[in-house]
Length: 82
Length: 501
Image (cartoon, rainbow over all chains, first blue to last red; front, side, top):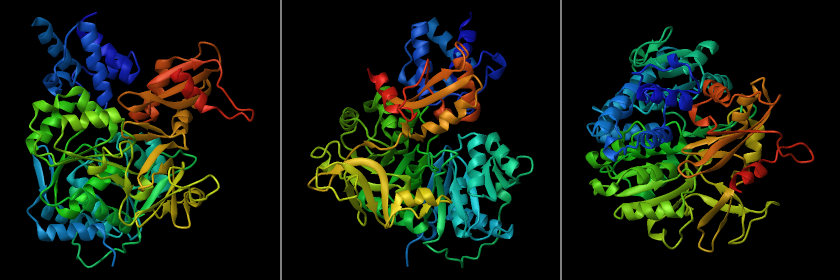
């Protein structure tokens, strides 16, 4: 599974409680759609750190990196390429 | 004559019309502009036939429109009913019906509230566009001759707390209730027009409500920040805006301390912090003081039924009285009473009762609950604790099963009712379990009608449709049976204890 679909499945399963991919568009804002709250975001970050062995720094915890499936995937790829 | 909230805004706008009241992102609104917006809104309501005592349900995020609609409704002699914007149609419908709201103000994108309003047939006003059948917020305008002075003791605001559909708890407050509490808070915090705050608390809860009214009273600036999904950004905002204050609940501070290196920011302008909304652990309190040694920390306690605040712990007494929620606010009396209603001696544990100008008028349209809670002018807080010899209150918990998760209160029955809607569910019990960040997390113990008959993901998905996100159980345990008393009552304590074993 690509990291993008894995991340999407994680969000679907843990916040929307479904496997239905159509429930979430790749560029949906997780904040504006009310999909994650502050603890949800921490869980998401923990998941990224554990699953992909990266460390999300404080100043990387910004919407530009984390607010949608597309943004998270791009952020993850940048981190992994380092 | 008693002070009113509208008089506070009028006076601040008259004194310092150009002072910034609210900042949200790039948008700044002055007190003069805010007062004009409130008057226009009040005039618009009156023109459209809104009568004194009518209820207006206010379902907006923190914004200038929220404040204008709140104060505008009071100016028009109405009762404002702030609603949790994250709620679902099920809750909205229930609240709108219970208070018989004739108007709803919400975002054009709040589908759940719009659906509830449509099913009941209220007038609807939307911000951020015009929803079908609704009026635009900016079109609610009219001349409002500044002649009417609403009665300070008349009903002004209903705040729904975590009741259930069976027992609605709409806390009814007068302007006098809130304004007197506002004055007391302003005094102990030493708030002035030179103060400013980054506010992450929603105005529709009594804590956020009190942040709003206290700042309006003195003409201080409120910088609105969305929420804590990105804690780093909130701290950055506190630093950049050079605010003098910050208000949070225990989970707010746990999150900021856990995820942000506070010493990397210039927070030197921060004069004080307030903490309410449940007990914060001594460890978190100490960490917070170490991280921000120059900011005075005010630990506070209260409840919606008391407008907001009942006690505060003067920062100078924090070390001496660690673990206490402090002393009664000026004008408020506290008593700890035994099961039989007698006044307890110092150090003796009992139920906390309070008396003062901030105590609610009662629960809206619920005389039974009112009679249980208000007796002889005294408020039964339902909280258990003791007063020490110096009059400092120490809390030991609540008699009720209410779950405190983050900034929210959740009644277990509210969640149980929704889970019971599923045909596969035979029985369910919901409890709060310890959670490092949230204080408590929601856990559901579910008995299936037939073995293997419940899909946990489906159960959560159903909850998500029917309940605000913060009410969805974090944990679901499928069990064979629930522990019960001889009379068939579920033993919740046993379920909680199972958790800690």
